[in-house]
Length: 303
Image (cartoon, rainbow, N blue to C red; front, side, top):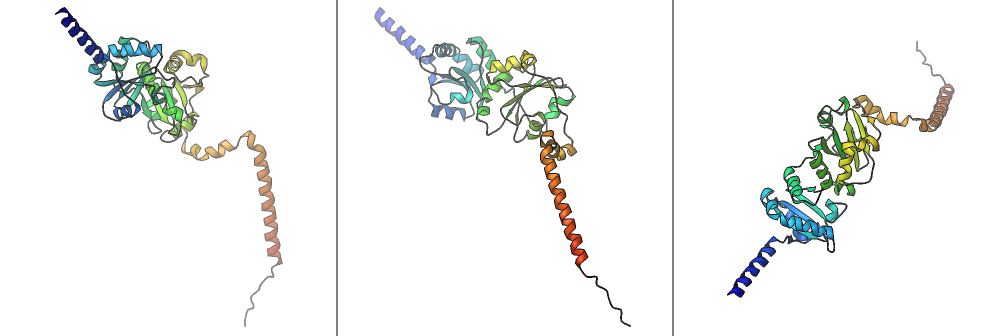
């Protein structure tokens, strides 16, 4: 009898343990999940990784809460080829996809912190700016009365930019109560603003504060590095520049000419001017000579 009870208890524990394990999916299954309408929490893991095991234990523990509070499917993907799209630093990476929009978790491997961070960011925090709404929303040229702005300039052709989407959402989730986090397409809807701020090369990151702009020039693209820069790093790792004024229609038209008339083009301009003057003189002489050689025609008046 005791042996039978022991076997029942053992079977129950094994079944409960199996139920608590995170479901493993391959890349094909994962893509199917991410292209659907569900919220999905994905733990990207790899074999023989102690920190990955720590993440797996914590996420397994809070699996029921993640499922209930986020209405999310919770899975893990081991040695996935997709991880670099969402976290350049690779495994372990914990990503919450909110109906397809990813946000990367960064912080301590702690169950309460993970739950709080994801629950606090059920909705995306990053704003999308364009030339049409940039000045209205940021008030950049008037001293940023709408608060500080940290802007990520990206383009569709930039592979690095695509891999920073979840990272930038993470920055937005961390700083959304302190400042504004935004993205801007530097070659399409935001090209005029990108020209104005000198951010045509992507990725580019500009921090706007009280009428000044600070460029993030480091190549460290982690949530921690971006957050540190926005909170205080801009004071020591960047030189403030005044936000350029909004270009007028005349300046927009004359801009290419004004940019050409710089000191480094003086020599070529002088050469071009002399060449043009020689042509004008030559043509003038030809015309005068031709006119002087033609006989003067007079009309005979009949009586």
